[in-house]
Length: 129
Image (cartoon, rainbow, N blue to C red; front, side):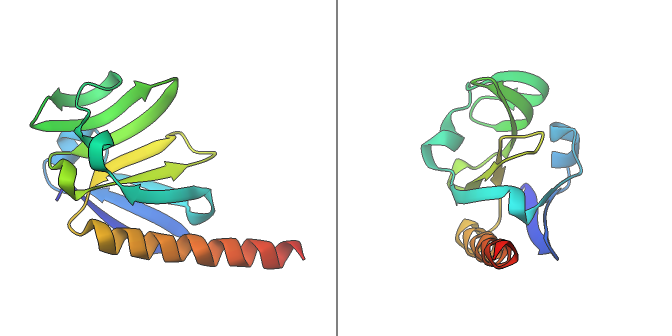
């Protein structure tokens, strides 16, 4: 596991664990849950070790990809060693368009963040009425 994902109030918190703080040049990333548009399994996207131009971080194909990369004109944050354990978090109105991160339990992360997105969407639509 390279990152710990949690929801604190209305904020998504991604904390890099151990040496991943060094490799990725980040300790933590936070975003309002209302700026999270989706979360899904990393799949093939997380296996694309060569995608993007490294701005800062580490890229050793097949071993680690961590840090900030520019892909298709967007900044994407990566912290991946095991692509099978990754999630992709899509963001809006944030410095990163996407977070591609390895977590201990991708399914649990998807459930937790998905529920938070649902709650944020419900409260947003109630506020508009």
